[in-house]
Image (cartoon, rainbow, N blue to C red):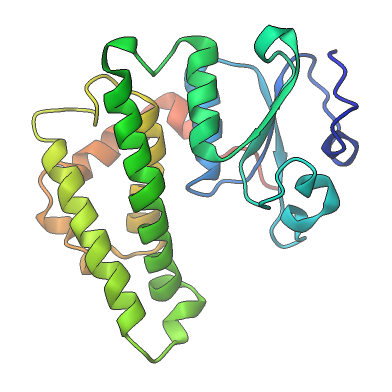
Length: 231
């Protein structure tokens, strides 16, 4: 087994599978990006559940890997030059895994894929997440309706952008790619987790609902959505 003793996080969550990517995550819209990518690419990995209830993300062990205390994060024992590499930020992890395996980031439309990946990172994730907070979490108790309305209207706008871009396409950048792995989990969260489809114009969309259904039907997606396994 490659020596990962230089990474303090491995003392809290020891690796057991030789050479496997060590994934520190939980099944959230951002977290499952990494697990779905690992499943789609066929890379061996070991999932370590980061419990928000136990405040694992703020533990010294986790902060030693990601000082920004967010999931997912990974250690690949077989990184560039055969040396271990640690990474956080889901978008960076997707790009790294795609380049490592030569999968889901085709050279022919590389920048189109990256364009839509950044669309998710800069727009869909932050806006959908804030709407979820104000619509389905603690923010729903706030009397001032302006914050929720701000995120509701921006979420509806982003959905329309995505819907238009999917016209005549099964996937957002042509072939299935890491951009889809980034985008679709947030659509699932909006529809199924936050129950916000009725307030964001979901039913009027022509392409997005079927796009999400196609994504969720993929066997690798189904496996990745429940990793790391919860007790």
